[in-house]
Length: 113
Image (cartoon, rainbow, N blue to C red; front, side, top):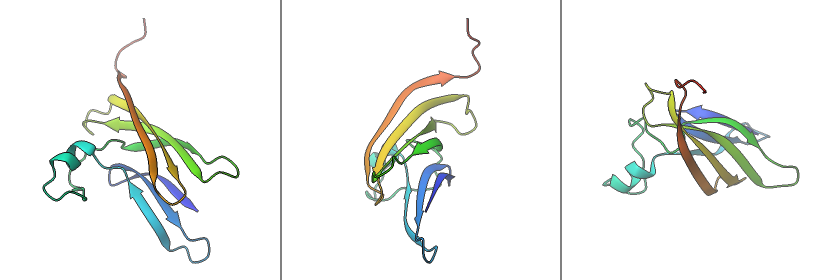
């Protein structure tokens, strides 16, 4: 059983054991920018709101597949969510992310011509 969505302002996937409902594993998508600048490589500081993906809007796990595909958004500034970048990722059912793509920005305040 999976809980997929937003946790600590990051796109998150939490896998629960079907029998005991204990957490098997948890993945939060942090910021590659902060990771590169972090003095303690290998950990993310959760006090920073920026992440490579903040929200998951949709996901699918095809039948007989161990892959999960998800899409959502990245917000550079959580107070200005109208400017966002579309993101998507593919991960296996053990929590290993195979790829994460971030696309162009979209300003939702602009009217269509």
